[in-house]
Length: 219
Image (tube, rainbow, N blue to C red; front, side, top):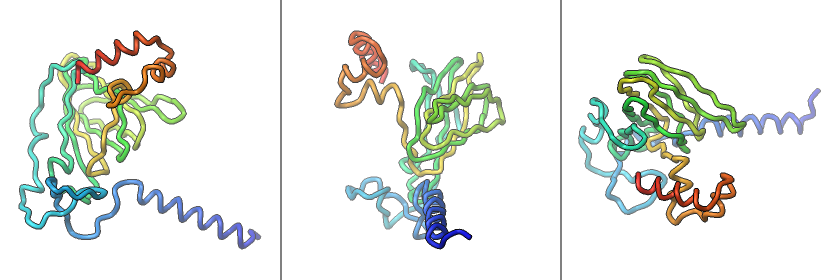
């Protein structure tokens, strides 16, 4: 027979784990809706509600058409989060569209507040994420396929084809946030010390300055 104290501890641990799982994404809403007042100066965990709203606050057409880019990475992200759709405030969901030129890359990044799932609209992509054990999970996906990137893990997408590609992404957060690995480390403001970066990547100070300069010019 399991001692009462141990049993109680096991039940408590399971309760805590279950609670953490439930609250892993945005907190539950407490009312029908809370349309974001994007102009409010009041700071809360999210956005304050505005009193007057219309159907326009719940609508966005920016994901319908492809966007083209000539940036260095060859990809462009069109967000459909609470900043474009104020009615998403407190609802815990958002979307995005990512367009890629041939060989275009959405470089390694993470979303600290959301798991992401993508649906391939056009083209063929090499996608993957890296676990906390430094294991790469990657796959080639094509039109009609889905792929999931777990919350907080570094991931990427690359168009391996000779024609443009596009995906629709969905997130379980109204504002998932994006941490780009390269720009976060080398173009932070104020900047990370050069000696920290040099030792981390086992490179010289000149290489650090060259990377910083190159990324800063591409922002």
